[in-house]
Image (cartoon, rainbow, N blue to C red; front, side, top):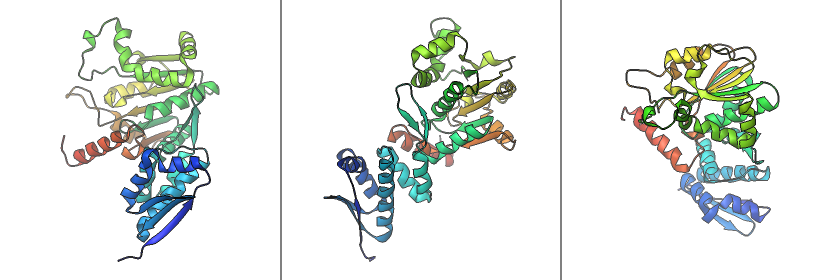
Length: 323
């Protein structure tokens, strides 16, 4: 039997202890469950005992969580799970570095940070390229982070307008049965874009800029025949675009513009006879200078912890060919 090891990690303040242990000690229970080590609170910190590998995993994770707290970050169960997954993958330090990056500040003054290494790579791709594909499951922040970068670009006068678009594809409901005119019918499909805008600009600023045409939110069909200059353009839910629609959209790109195309190829709502063009176009173009494709996974999910497990279960089933 391998010799038991003991590591003590000291906390400087009660706040550090509260963040590391979590509500009802949920964080240390998670670390113990995954690593196999035992963790218990002592007078000035935490004592970790167990086999060498278990103690190494647990102590590395606690130390990096503590480093995150001491640099102004916050710890929750998603953060703990992410760092444990990263330890298993061998990139925990890179993961910690990604968690300290502030992307933007919301209208209410809350900092928006990368919450995974995949998100950090996504933000870097947006900074360094003109056409960016963000492909990944629900809850990975694809649209929200792109919106943050769009608002920053507008405020810094890197672009003169923001254009947000989605294909108005029915997901089991019929547009014709929704009340109102065409705009009223498509507004529900565009609601996530409005919500993200309100987070970063507030409703009054958004309304004022929308009236001036500085911000435009419209269905993809409205893009046909246009040239979009000096704009930050986000095409959301692009898995519901056909190959031909992707071509139409990408050839709208004008001088001084940047476009981010987001989608989840596991949630395609197109009719059976039509195929999504998102993955095919991303693969076809990513070797072109100025084009980048970032693929996010369940490790980048930042919604409720169950969302990550649900995404993992679907990924596992799809690999086995089960639907």
